[in-house]
Image (cartoon, rainbow, N blue to C red; front, top):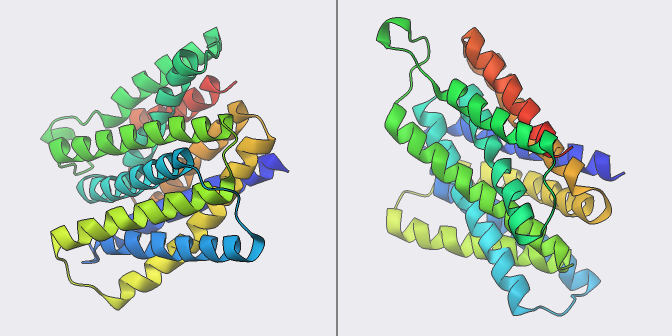
Length: 281
């Protein structure tokens, strides 16, 4: 059952990332969509908690949950900006290699043993990342990339999601209540985005509410499944399945936007995904 939950998480997160790609460059505020996204998920989770009853909130739960929400919101915004500067079929797999961070932290913070296969996976991912991001000179360029800002957004999203993975592992390790974590996560993220909206002063559009609310429902299902999978299954299998959400974006982008990749980039994408799997075997 927990494997199905991990697959459902992968599909939900991948679908949300594809929606972010589809809405990029449409004049819609990334911050507003994310705010409605978080607000919808927060209200749904809070409503569930009021009906079912809450476990006692702790400061640690609030802090960890809020940090996860802020990091996830920031990663989504940065990912959307990266989609506007380069092709999603390269951007998504490159960001998904953030799994290197929780793998290394598992050894340092949780004293987990990293096997030879996992080290091979880490090296494969790093090498694949270098191959995927490589773009030849103008004469050989098929894909338009505004390289420096694209790479900056990719790196910020990479580290945000990597640290998020560490915090998720920490929360399950400490056996913190899932509902309280979700309420803190979505509530903290919504507050962070609301503050950002006052700073950016962008116009609010009805379409942002519709798309954001839809994404919030999808994300809530994804994270409920995520926590369930981590609490009942093996994290060493859950993480690579969830990381494969990049495939949803790759396949969807190639299908919807007819993005064309060079052979070495296709190989880089698949070896990056292979590396993700190897780190969790």
